[in-house]
Image 1 (cartoon, rainbow, N blue to C red):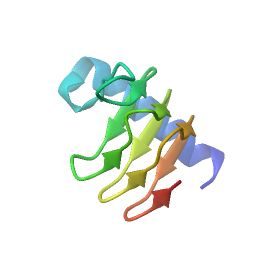
Image 2 (image 1 turned 45 degrees about the vertical axis):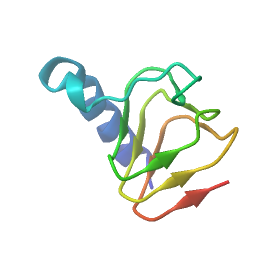
Image 3 (image 1 turned 120 degrees about the horizontal axis):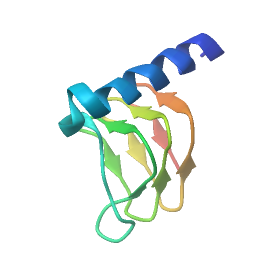
Image 4 (image 1 turned 90 degrees about the vertical axis):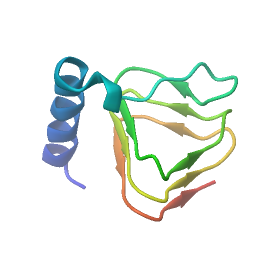
Length: 83
């Protein structure tokens, strides 16, 4: 990914706050991963509750995010596993 892709994703996620806030993830780090800022997680993705995600993260279909993972400013494509 290049910087332009990441900037575009960041702008779309920010726009979702106003146009489609239901698409943005939320979580407290207990039952769900801790979410910081604007984050999209596809419904089929599995994210461990101890993960910390955001800001500006987009997680695609069938992604698996393991325990203790920290993601910041990235786009995770389909079927990726992060341990």
